[in-house]
Length: 101
Image (tube, rainbow, N blue to C red; front, side, top):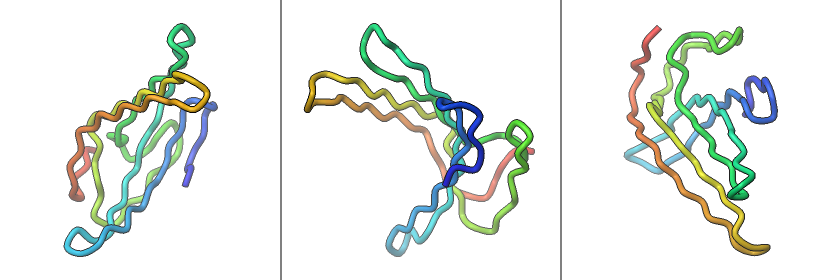
């Protein structure tokens, strides 16, 4: 769910992943910033878990859920042809309830 949307390309989003046992469910908060790259018909989306307990005025609630922390994330989406899109994911993540405040 989108918790805060500053612009079309900047958002704070909460995901809940329902994995089978033994991983169980996980929660993930991500801030997204998108950068269009018109010359290559693509967009670069940078993402990470917010480091503080607020995100540009939005207060992030504490949770007992096990959380996935994304330290660095990048998503490249490129239009190649009417029925062909290139998608590249790069994420460094860990899980736990540790967050710097």
